[in-house]
Image: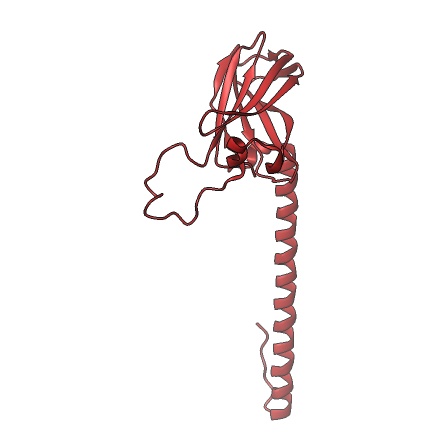
Length: 201
């Protein structure tokens, strides 16, 4: 910290003014550094999410199955778009050797809370070699059907759960306000993955 030795009042006043100006400059400089750091961290976070969707901790996930040393499950992206929903089929290699995920066909279906079939789409997943102890993924997109084009019993796919919950709904654990997505892997990998969701965002 700088020291002041002059006894002249005018010089002392000038000294205090300069000291305040220096402190203001220092505060602005620190604020700019903080903003730069925050923006840099945001950029790194966005790039990481783009490279690895598994970093999105709030991803809604399906049941998990194991086959040939791979743990398989799918998740739904939190990024909402008007006409599509993006999903990720995750392949976790539980072994210390490279494991092959073969090319497979799959059937993606959605059923409402009453078990009515509301959506069906055929998919094909390409072959992929998964390195030891690595989680890899394959993204796939499901086009939405507008609420107007759904059958009456399936319009509930767009029905949001009541919020805030009332005394009548807070302890209601029935199948209302939800639907189930099924991903049936066929052929060499004969597994079915199920994910429960609240509504079609």
